[in-house]
Image (tube, rainbow over the protein chains, first blue to last red):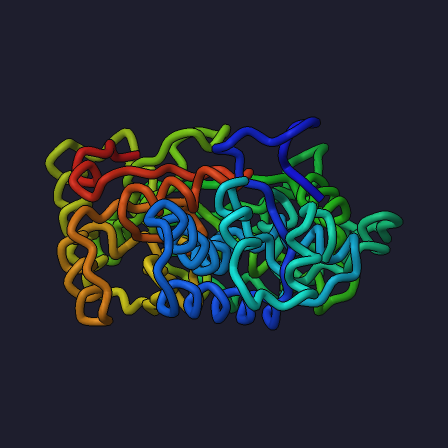
Length: 115
Length: 254
């Protein structure tokens, strides 16, 4: 389930990862822990801050325009709390480098097609 | 659009796919019973019998007049899937009357400034005066007889009333969302005073020095810094307009 054109997404392309509320909470927790827990390359830190922002923006997007995600949820049978979290390749890589990222979440972010 | 005109009395998908006809006879019976209950000293509703043709429903309020043949109205109701029962037809007729045009005097007396789409393709936005009728907010288009001063006064008064509209504010991380509980288009009423929005957002704990607004008329209004506003709107396939708060006052009026 990707909005990106075929082939490798460009660096600025944001790819939707459909995450349930529980997984979004886990993602935020893991990213916050990484940002506070150890020294980190400043660029990676910026990407992780952007991931935290995106988690809020994803919820705001759904509040303003609920119809498109609702259509996908109806078509797939996903739960009501599943939202598209849109990440750039750099943001996704930064998340995957976070130590202690739950395996289920890592699998979901792996190629952007799982839910 | 006709489905909206007839309110919530539609009978669902099956009725729309295989509609049972709303008959002119039934519509006339309902109109005879319902129209007298909807009229006011200013709002006159009646059926006019044309010789050799069917009846016409006439709605007159101040300078506005709407006429529609009962046959045409019955066909519109059928297409919209209105339940062909006395209750269904009565609800649809009441909703149709509620959607009548807004007279100049009503806009002057109770108009509220909001932002609406300025074109059918939903590419640009503009200020507009709307008038509440129950849970509806009907747009006002100034009549040909309305002079520039009269129109200006109505718009200025509508801006004042927009400041009194009570909206819900939800802060979602770096994004502030404004919505109206009952009438979606009223969410944009707050935009008449973006500085006040900014102060309320600050009071909720979010500082937004360079506030941009993401406007989708009839949907909640989102406020955020420019980068976050771009991320919010740029990744949605839905129509919206993003602009810095300083540009709100420069939008045209419909």
